[in-house]
Image (cartoon, rainbow, N blue to C red; front, side, top):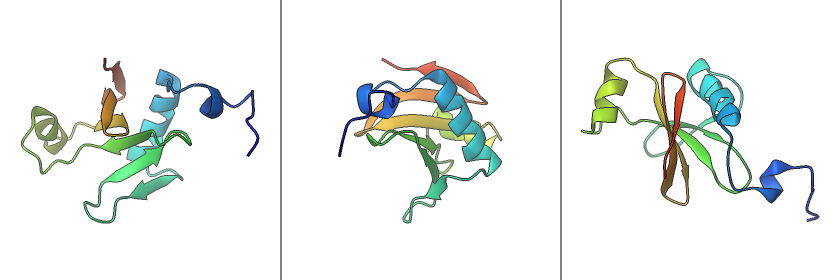
Length: 97
């Protein structure tokens, strides 16, 4: 496969706030490109070819974020390789260290 110099997926590991916001709209708005994990049923959107995902918060957990999801907040996480990269609550993106 040839690397495309104009494709951010091939040259940069970072995912922009804009890309996350668009994916969040898809995730919670039912847009195309939304998938579900077979075991948990949680919805997710692929953000790039490097395995970065936006995953909705599991409301059945016991965390403060799950509590917010149960209360109707739209909570999601940007993850890659098991690492949390960003949190989204009702469209507000917080990049994590």
